[in-house]
Amino acid sequence: MTNSSRRLFYINPTDWTWWAWTVTTVLLIMGLSGFNPAFSAAMAVTAGQGIILLVRDRSPAAISVQLRAAYLLLMLISYPSPMRWFYWLLVVGTIALIVFGYCTMARLLSLLPWNSRETYTLERLRRTFFSAPDLDRLSTDSAAAGCAGGLCTIKAQVAPPAADTLVIHPKLPGHASSEPDVPATCPVK
Image (cartoon, rainbow, N blue to C red; front, side):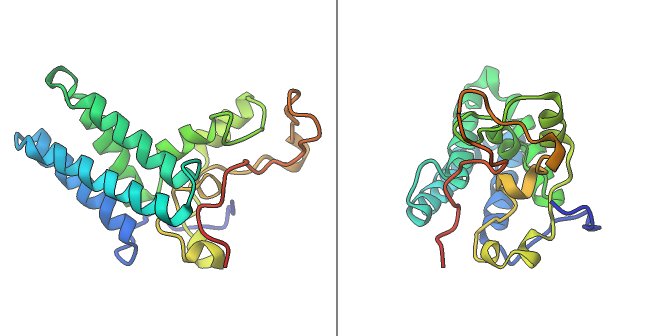
């Protein structure tokens, strides 16, 4: 992550996933406004995104696929009437993504053991939740430019550890990389 990024907003109408998340947010707001079929439509949009990205990435372990699966699961949990309040949290989180590029779900997923071998420390949690997203990632990383929604990746969301704070996971001998072990979200060109 570069600290030289001065962009505050991430509004990217040229990216199809930005539009998919925007449509999902609008549908959730419509559902919260009383139009209940909009919740099902939002789930369909998210499931469609997940299927497209699963076909593209060819792996359910890809962070882009995990993200859509987790989001869909949260929408399903929120569907019963007593749980509908939880949709507000999804709306706020998705607005943070489409306006500021901050993806809370990608950051949470980065903490799962199959997505990273870095040990859990307070420094890691600070970097995970309080580092600014790399909004210039698509313009500086040509490999990510072909990726749909390049900001919902661990690399774009979570600042890497400082070289002097690299901690090797004690249960994973020989693993000295600070990069998460996540399948590439884009096919290698």
